[in-house]
Length: 150
Length: 163
Image 1 (cartoon, chains in turn brown, red):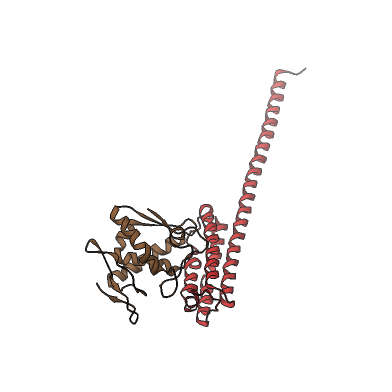
Image 2: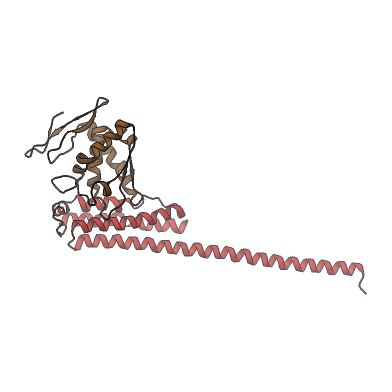
């Protein structure tokens, strides 16, 4: 399955968190990427995430937050198998995400450093003990920003 | 009247003369072609060196604008993308021609962009896309980045001219 962020999500993308901008990395993950990846995982397909196109480009924090959350919920091993990032225009994104974001978020997953959420999200998929469950894993509270429900 | 041995001597002389001419023609042709190839290589290196210096000027201009002018977050994002793509395209060619690593300018393409876009000044201006100026701590970060990484362009030039 191929998904082009600029064509199929938004021509312009934001920065890391919903509280900072529209079409943030946090928004992209919860509104699109989590479902897309689950569909591929469930069907044995590979998700090709295409970063090319549009005028706008990305900020490092957008890609780090969105793909990082994927690592947190599905593990580095599974994401490495099922996600291929494509960028012919800007190949340095692939180097950066695979070289820095992947290990950073895998470490966060292993040490339990939860992702920050800045708005209420609907339930999302997470791999737990070898099977996928869908629920609200982290509850948003305005005062503390997140409460882990898992 | 010429004797057979005279004719043999004349023939030998003619063969020697023809051999010398042919050798001379071949030598001139070889030198000419090698010289042409060397000239082409030299011109190509000069061309690519000029392109590298052009990219360096672009990044220096980008940093100068980040430090000294007010810009919108959307402009900063687009400027980074434009210059980064230009650098990537050039590096792909240099990698093929001279073995220059594709990721040699990754600090400019990623780290510099992170300094610019992770800063609170950028983040706070993003939603309304308003013009802003970076505060002193970020300005210092840009200056330090440039001091530490400007040598990368010289590293590329060395690889081109050693290639």
